[in-house]
Amino acid sequence: MNKKITKLLMVGILSLSMVACSSTDKKESETSKEKETQKDITLVTTTSLEDTGFLEETLKDFEKENNVDVKVVAKGTGEALELGKRKDADVLFVHAKSKEEEFIKEGYGDSRHEIMYNYFVVVGPKDGEHNETISKMSIEDAFKYIKENNLNFVSRGDKSGTHTKELSIWENIGEENSFDNYKEVGKGMAATLQTASEMGAYTLTDIGTYLATKDNLDLSLVKDSDESLKNIYSIVTINGLEENMKEMSDKLVDYYESEDVQKSIKEYGKDKYKEPLFYTFE
Image 1 (cartoon, helix red, strand yellow):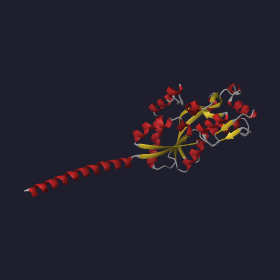
Image 2 (cartoon, one colour):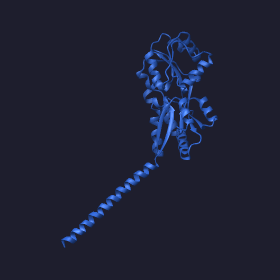
Image 3 (tube, one colour):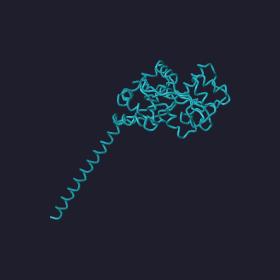
Image 4 (cartoon, one colour):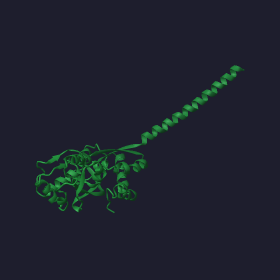
């Protein structure tokens, strides 16, 4: 009788063990399946959208809604476009219209979608003796004045959207972007602003990055925005992507063009900086 009871107990324990293992296997299988279905997409973007925290904030819902992990790579627009050409990016979020249009014309890009804008401004040393004079000038005259007076000027020098805009201003006034106190740093916007602050120099920056970092800078706004300094950010999709990547990049465009996200863009930064960092076209 004891042997019979022992045998029954062993059978029961074995059965419970099999059920437990089956449950564990099922959970592991479901987790594995979930990981397999989660998609990754590489978004190469300008440093200003990274430095302002804009992408970190606005991508959360997109990732959740689409079960996707957006890998953000922040570069100057020029380098971002080069990564797009090599298919090292699945989608671009950049701000150099002429370069973006050329990218598409050459067959690397599929489409371009203007999402939002802000403005370029000139910042310079706090309480600088030339600030008031520069503030009353057009952007072209301001650049001429800075060169003629050999004032410290820091350029990103990295083929970014901001650098492209700076070069276009020098070209428009027929001046070479070289003088004794002109310095190229080859860095992102936040790092360039830090260098300008340390040198007591002037620089061209997007207003968003300046507002997001100004508390740590010894710089002030010198030449405010105008229509000639409009800075448009666009999403550019890549030509020749695999079908699943094209679908996801198109979803990203739809997401940023949606009414809810456009509304959140118009509000972004207001609570902290008393003004939005970006504007929409609505």
